[in-house]
View 1 (cartoon, helix red, strand yellow):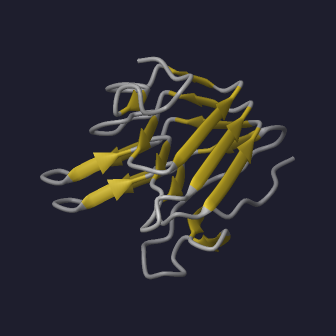
View 2 (cartoon, one colour):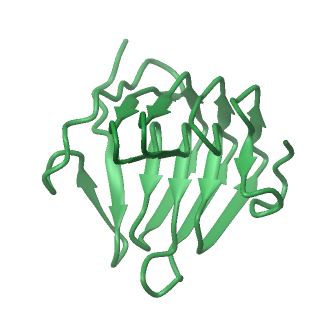
Length: 149
């Protein structure tokens, strides 16, 4: 049995907003039975595309537990594409946090950070599996403790 899921973007002040509520195109995320499964394409020709599955770009607080973040593609021909599975930035204060626990982040693609891209802020992995993402699992190298590749 499927359950509805609204793909969200973490905002400053620890709030969440559905895609489209701030002027961006609606994101076709899906939630399926059992554990969560997040999957969505993001494309921004000549611009910036980020966070195909999860996006915490403005210093908010985001927690995701026991999800499968699978087969997201972030593209930006002639632009910047980061974070196929997750994009995280600390916002203007640098205090934004993302905590992932027991998730599987796999088979995602982006120009950089196919699995996870961390621009700034605090990102914590607690028993997550991050593998088989292209061109790399986490970026920049060493920015996500506990992530290899």
